[in-house]
Amino acid sequence: MTKPYESELKTALAAVKQASLICRSVQSAITDEVLEKKDKSPVTIADFSSQAVICRELLQAFPADPVIGEEDAAELKESENREFLEKIVSELNAAGVPDTTPAHVCSWIDHGGAKTYSDRFWTLDPIDGTKGFLRKEQYAVSLALIVEGKIVLGVLGCPNLPCPAEGTVTGTIYYAVAGQGSFAMPLEQNNSQASVPIHVTKTPDFSESRFCESVESGHSSHGHSQQIAEQLGIEKDPRRLDSQAKYAIVGQGEADIYMRLPTRAGYREKIWDHAAGVLLVEEAGGTVSDIHGKPLEFNQGYELSNNQGVIVTNGLLHPKLIQTLNELGISQ
Image: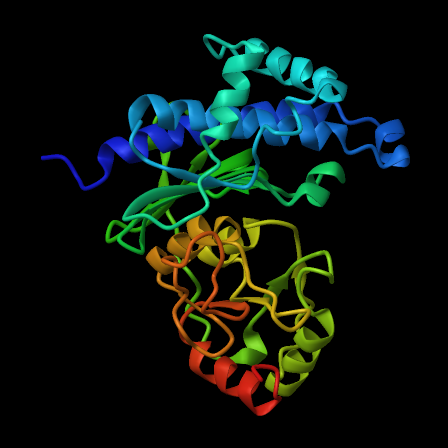
């Protein structure tokens, strides 16, 4: 008997794996000279290559499904960016992607151009954590399927995170299907039989807890995080890393809390920055809400329009953390 979304999971795993391997190949070629020049071309090439590969797979398997992605091909089609497009074509050809031509690549990327809500759609961040990518640190390839406003499937490719299934192996694919649990498997494995279940911690006390947050203070208020930590008696240093890899860290029990606190009034999170990670943590036994304790609403288009910030915990710590945010006025 087949499980719900079995076909979708198979397609998503294959797509994210291929995209993650391409991204890793591009990242491995980043030199010190590129870093010194703050040259963003490697992440641009990897970003578009990742979206092209994933959208190609989704288009072939589920042609009627819209994809809300972060990128479109408008800039690539401009003559001054022809070199970028040629490099993307070269990367996809090297990875063995069939039918790779400049026109096909642009059409695949543009398949991720939906912006409005529908009853069934995918949301994609081809490289979440671009600054981490350029620092040769953490980033993620993120894909989720949303049906009638609910996340039903999420896949995260984390090419630089050690795999809990194989402690010596770097590179992990995390995945979850609603009601079926969360799992991790080595990036370079060919089937999900090598996967292991992951679970959040059972830490009940803040004094024993650790939180993780963004490396970039522009993404989340580090000052507020420190204020909350002091109020709750959190003594361990925060773990700072880029991308939805933070959801994976909480989901597999290496941290208890992830706080993404608003840095300015009126800012709303993008759905592709959270959807896959949210399901991963929830299916691992954790809790995710906004800073007011409200569930995140994925039925508002490409933004979490009805939510402020994101709070992720092992579940046991959630009520007190939300209460503390309110008491400190951070949720105002």
